[in-house]
Every structure is written in structure tokens, then in C-alpha cells.
Length: 335
Ligand code: ACO
Image (cartoon, rainbow, N blue to C red):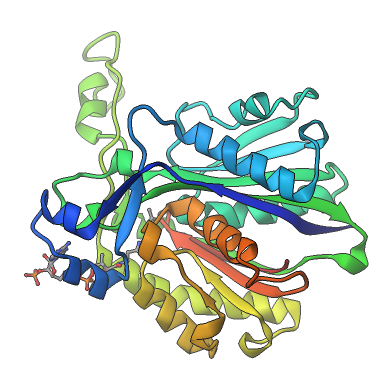
């Protein structure tokens, strides 16, 4: 059995924050942000909006494009590191879409690599014969976990959701033909948003003895990042990963139609494209308008390029995600 991408969709919040807006709350400038990152503006969820609702909207548009009824969805994978329910927000999506067969739905947590992992997982479920229609959604609201007084991180992130529908097909039509997936827990020190250790200590002693019962609940710290280290990791690991995935697919950088990287920093995108010898006109980039939207960035950019007619049926795309964990991975897909 093969699998192919048959629809995509995306959704964004209403509130648009420019670099000049940010310069009013932290010491920065439009010039610094746009030169160092390529980002000009981002969209941020307000209190009256929900990330799950954005994910539902993106999923609905992907189903409409694919002309697939919500009742025919077998599995929903919600790739997010910022769920609105710690136990998983995915089951809310088929509920809101009105899927009457109670399809399996669960979250995948792999930060900015989440969507790539979701796409690969969807392909495995379909090829194994378990499911026919898998809705893969990448959605994140990192604005809720950013320290808005820290100019080195708050300028980077935006909120969004993007989705694709992956469908079973005959093996000769297979649309996912190379992949490469990794993690390096050692690199977690460079990028994380962990539970606050002092709150854990207050709840339970380090030898496991209960100091104070019942334990108090703990909260998460904001995104902590060593940007230089993450930058180095990305430009080192991502080209290697894409090259491995291309090799599996029997392709080279010059034989793909599009390079679609996680939208974190234009300088990372340019460096990877140069290394793979992909010319700028074949590189998908929309981070100027959205910032780094974590697991949403790849399907958000794909949706824009598909709906504007630039990505056409039959085009080959090398897509790669990278980020916290550390995690990184690539897939070679045909649209
Ligand atoms: N405005 C003005 N100055 C700033 C700002 C800002 N917003 N932020 C930092 N600076 C200053 C620093 O304080 C430093 O000043 P100093 O030299 O006086 O100490 C100077 O600018 C240079 O700082 P660097 O951190 O070295 O700047 P760099 O060129 O590395 O750019 C950036 C920083 C944009 C964060 C870059 O390192 C980057 O993009 N890294 C990768 C991030 C990434 O890709 N993350 C992806 C994963 S996200 C996820 O998974 C959740």
C-alpha cells in the first residue's frame, strides 16, 4: 500500500504584531529582527481564541480540499508542544469536525519537528493497513510560553495551525518516498521549556520523602534557548538529514521541485538551501509574515504555496523540521 497527500489547510489568529510593536516592549528594532531572522511580523492568539479551534479550522480546510467527509477520517494526529489539555487535545478535533465514528486521535510532542514526525507516522499507519485517511495537524501557540521581557526569544515566535490529509493509495502512486528522523537529548540544554525544578523540590524531597503533603502542582518555565547553539545545530544537522532522505528516495537536491524547511530563521533556510544547491526560487519561505510557528510552520507554508498554485500536483518536496528535544527529521513527499 502507498500513501499520498490529498489536501491541506491552515488557520491563523487575528492579532498581528509587527517588529515595531515589539520594540515598544523590549529593547530591539525592526532592523535587528529582520536582518538576523528575516521575521517582520507574527500572529498571536488572544485570550478569546483557542489553539484547538485553529487546528479544527485548518483540518476542516484540508478535508474540504481533499473532498473527504469527516466521517471517513480514521486517525487525527495533533502535532503540538502547547496543548490546551495536558492529557492531549487531539480528541477535541474529530469532535469539533463532527466525525461520527469516534476516530483515534492523539497528540505528538516533538516541537518544531512534530509535523514531520506526524507525516511519517501517518504513512506508517496507512502502509501497515490500519487506516485509510489520516489527518495530520501541526499547531502551536508558543506565545503562551515565551518570556515577553526576553528580547532574544520573544521576537521569534508566532501562533498558527496547518494540516494535511494523508490518504491510502496504490503503491505505484506512493507520495512519501524518503525519510530521516533523529533526536539528541543531550542538546536539550540549548532549547527547552521544562517544569520548574524548584517547585518539584518543594513538593517532594530529592530522596523521594514527602516533605509537604499533598504535593503542590508545578508549572513550566518559559522557552529557554541558546540561539547560537541551536543555529549551529540546524545548519549542521538539517542538510545531512535531507541528504539521507533524498538518498533513500534516489534523488538529489537538484532533482526536487521545492525545499520546505521549518520556518525558524531565514539565515538557516538560506544556508541549508546553499549546501543542498537548491536555487532561491525553489525555496519556500513565509516566515517574514508569521515568525516561527513551531509544528505549524511547515503545513502553513505548504498550504500557502499550494493555494497560490506554485506547488502543483506531481511536484516533489523535501521537507525538514528541527528544534527542541533536540529533534530533527526530513521527509521527501510528492504533492
Ligand atoms: N534585539 C536587539 N539585540 C538583540 C536581540 C534583539 N531582539 N536579541 C539579542 N540581541 C543582542 C544580544 O544581546 C547580543 O548582544 P551582545 O553582543 O552585546 O551580547 C547580540 O544581539 C547578538 O546576540 P546573538 O544571540 O549572538 O545573535 P544571533 O546572531 O545568534 O541571533 C537568533 C539570535 C536570531 C536567536 C539566532 O541565534 C537564531 O535564530 N537561532 C536559531 C533559533 C532557532 O532556529 N530555533 C528553532 C527551534 S525553536 C523550537 O524548537 C521551539
